[in-house]
Length: 282
Image (cartoon, rainbow, N blue to C red; front, side):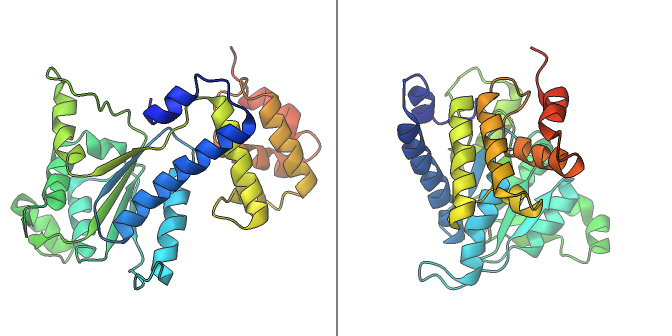
């Protein structure tokens, strides 16, 4: 489970709504601070958590501030987002394009790269802090020439890796092969568990982002705005989520987006369709 030890311990306590939201504010403060550290050229970062809980959107929102100039930091170049299925050569090309100091590459929704030996070797080379280590991949020279990039480069940019992959961080002298391959990457990055421990915490996070959307704060549940959902229907949806939180097969920001899709399709029976299509069998 990709949840911080603090939130995991708190989930075992009988906390009221205000206490949960207070701890969630601190949790999102920590995530924002670590993303800011990348934007301020301090370190690389791995953001790990369950699908649909806003890791990518939150990262975009924080970096967007730095593109405009933030905290007396001059504006940074627009981050390069690499998502989908990524091969070693595609990563080599994209990282070379954003190799200079101040440039950030966000590797998102590409869990396979953390299992692929070639991708891991490439990341290891880019993340290495031993001076100007040259990233060199001569075996792909033909493909690289076709992409109009060099066969080797010095990487001075910063990386954010967003992943849903379950990563064990307990020290273990008997770790499996997959873990041993991943360890060199983990040791070169800061790491944040962005997941939430249970549905009670998830519901409060959804409410915080819903309220933030109305107040124009850093929290922003965009699917309501994108779908032009009236405020009274928004409240109905939030109450519906709260009342049925343990019945959904998945409870996340994507759940809200799917409710919006049902409302656009059948405004008068979105809730019934949600029970039919989104509730777990058990």
